[in-house]
Length: 627
Image: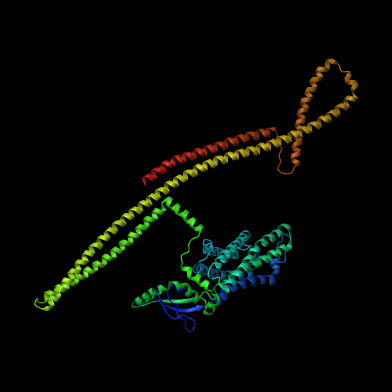
């Protein structure tokens, strides 16, 4: 508990080391017990570190055959990964017990750090916008959750998810380490000797943890791609070291809390009603000591012997400057300016101002009612006193001196009643005016809210229309690009296939003609005498037969060419299919049909969308106008 932050003097300690009973905010505080930070460190963090190392050592010494009996892709490695170790029954039990025991302690550590980094932030932070303890806290929570998930979901449950969680755990841990180091460096916990020792160790562990990431990736790649067996051993050793470094980094919280934080259990007992004024006066008196608040806090948290040795004057001055207002950084000012402009543009700022005025006049009305009730109570009390005096005067003789005294007292009460009635009328008028102003402010606030809602509705409709138009334009452009790409693909494939077919056909025709020429030349040389003896009257008949034979030969050549291409396409690897003229014609017709259908589909979708917009806009306008 931070006593100085609550403007009370630090109480004296008893012989057993606990504080004496003291008073704070109308309550009596009794310190029941106190815990040593060393004991908390030994109980909370040391078992997790020793349990992690014990699980790895037990697996390597006693169950090496079980974790090594694995279907290795590139040869058997000497050391298995941590995921295979925590899959064994005994090691899995030890690991899960350690992690589940360690998790709540880590949450307590994060909460403590989140609070202390707020209370003891240095006033001279160079970049206040970067000093964000929320990043430290939430990334630490995610890291703990990922560590629990890795322990529960192993290789035998879901190997892919386990690997993803493992790498996510490493990345989140790096971010958490960096934010922890930055917050520690720019807080007043950066003190000699333990603060700076802890900072140096944190930097060392963070650098080692950061260096382990490329080693893990490189060794894993070398084993699975290059089949280097020793690379997997390096991967396993780096993985073991990374887990140990992660837990050891969090164990450094011992240096953060040593001689700086007090863990105590205290009981708060309400004071009796008669002692309330005394406690209130004491609290008001202590407000004059506000400039010494942080100095007393540090002198109380740090042991007296170490306070003079390790806390310099500059640090105490920095502690005294904690309560001074810290100007936001440039980035934060820019962000706040953008947010203010956005709120002013959409009307939220006007609504907030109207609501603030409503709250102000509501408080004024409440104060006016309280004052009016007090005056009314005083008037009623005076009227009761007058009634008592009148009764007493009726019972008293006018010749007695007491009658004169009662008459004087009645006169004074009547004068006082008259003054109170005038004041009561003034307070009643002020109350009515406050109520009237409150009604006006409420009406104005409702009007501002209605305007903001209307503006938001129209902005929503406009954004929807713009989004629909952009969607139509994007769909049209996408369809055109898709069609052009399809035409290019089909045209290029068809051109290449046609060129190849023509080239092969030319080669085969050339070879066939060469063979035919050779054959005809041989027959012509042997039967030259016979050709010379042909009768001229049979020349015309012979030419007709030659033309018929040429046509039949051309058809046979085309058929032979088609069969040759078909045989060649069957012999080639892959899904290559020979396409003839008929098939080419069918493909052209199919392409035209697909193009016409896609154009029709695009046209229908555009018409339908425009029709929907045309129907929606009048309905929305009628709905909003009706509202």
